[in-house]
Length: 333
Length: 295
Image 1: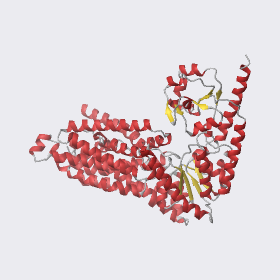
Image 2: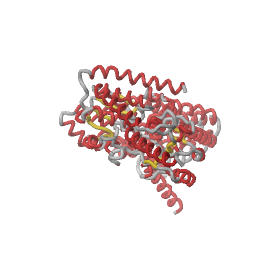
Image 3: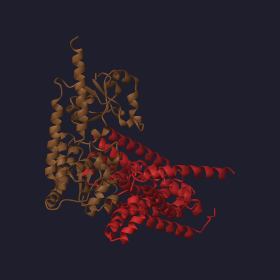
Image 4: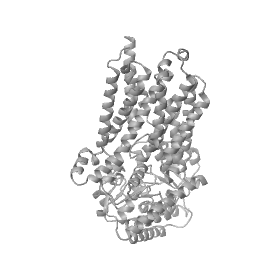
């Protein structure tokens, strides 16, 4: 199938889009600290405060939204390619819920009160535990075993999270857990970004290393093996790469749905349905989409901010339905 | 239990550790642009510090439903914030106060940039209430006003309690959202006790907050019922349980009382509003009993 525009042009367009959104994210804010207010402060002798807002509040938030979006996009594209199933998103292998469970336990035990970074650290620990479990449960099995193991891990983690909320004797802590689970990058600091970034980068490298095998896998597992693809190695790269990139991100932001599912869908026709080309395109697209959602969160409602995870799901799900309906009409006509 | 206790102790030590240098510095220079990001610290701040020194308070305190007892006129004149780091930075504060369970991301971020953020734990009893007033007095450079406020609080509390009729505390059915009830050692139960009543969950032998099944409640014989909650508007699934036929039968004919939410949300002097209402209800209940007794 021939893509509507050449691959390099597509990548350039997505890069320009991401850069534009990165810039926009640095200057757009809630009414009290909006674009014009900041410009006014820059020229009106209050440049220090304006720069502090940009450097210490907007920058970490922007970097986190972009890198988490990239992780979700690239992991979604890789998993969909590896499993040859367009309905897969990074949450399917249980990484989102295991990272969330780690974070919830940090709230419950009070560690997050004593030491703020205990929250993302325990989230990352949860994601790593998920990798170990997945390798143990589905390390040598097929794609079906992997999906089922992921569903089982998700179910156990969701149940344990409910149990934690159930047992929490402190209504304040319960409320905080519920708000955290909705997902947000608001007021995260540079520490959060620096903590998650190395894990996300390592995950990206692993996912990128699986790109060639994905092309061969689109012909089926047996054909791929005969072409010299090491299935076990590919599976390990895909699982570990997804778990540490998305897991580390989730540990800092909370659960963010739909980006990993929608972005590869959107871009697949544009890269001519070649799995390996979809990875980079989805990375850029995922970063852009999450940044756009985070900018929307800041301007949509004056006053209390909407949670980012709520916005991605509310906008993402209907859009996804529309895509499915469109694809169906095309197939049937 | 121990596992949950240790981080709390560490947290408390950390908070105190951070407060000491602040308190020392404020002896010479009192903070002039204070921002509060929590409903409960809002109230303490407004009671201790002149409004001119408050840069902003949480948006909750600006809502008439939440404005603390007798402070509406001050809250109305102040600016509000939604607990976002950006808004707080715009106010260029020299002291930030917040709750330990709310706006935690913003508090950690502001602290990291170098601002003084003092967090307050929710109060679990009247001693905590006094300690938090004292703490707020120290960090704002108003220790004398804090002592005065504590004395006023204790005096009014004693006045109200002196009016209580003798005898055992009757049961107050404080059926709230999702049958989420306050047992022994909760701030709410201390307020109810101070007003001359026992809570349902205390009567059933629970301590802490619990979801108590409806059937367990039906055995108790309350003498006073809380008249739903403001949560009924806007509507909430959580108040559906109040419409259960069995519960309505049990509560039919029992006197009702409406305690505004704002009087019990925070462990602050606003609770005197709740204590006063409860004491009045207790006196009425004693009069009714006296009328019925000679038979």
